[in-house]
Image 1 (cartoon, rainbow, N blue to C red):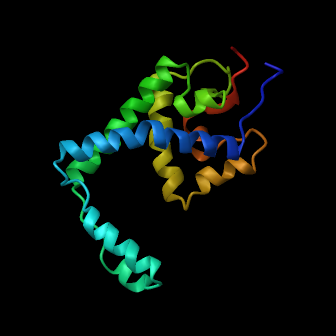
Image 2 (cartoon, rainbow, N blue to C red):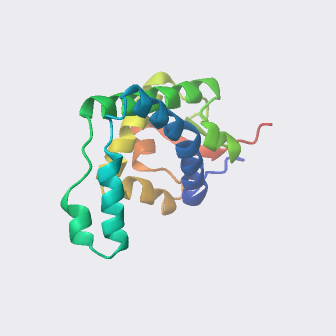
Length: 163
């Protein structure tokens, strides 16, 4: 496939931002209401933000909002499932990727990814995050624009030339 154009860091970042708005945020709202407000302590978060805005970082970081692990896990699994469903339905794209005309493909064949790759790539986000975000930042420096999660799942993100 000679006309492959790999999607770089900033276009992928923008697509992820859009996915946060269109996928993760709606899921978060549903989970928050399902938890009857027990998922996340917004009062503590608001107080910490006030401390931070007044320049008191020590107090802002002194106590973190209480979170329910049960509801957090439900949120994370829900976002994972919704993301994989979009990848399967929209041939490697989420709403954000679709909006900017990029998609995830197999790194060797440039065909649609399979379920194993989708799950590996999703779990690879965790590795990319815990490695001080290096797994994402490496997209900016590699010729093939692959992040650690792409390498783990044998995927690439390319521009979708199809209408």
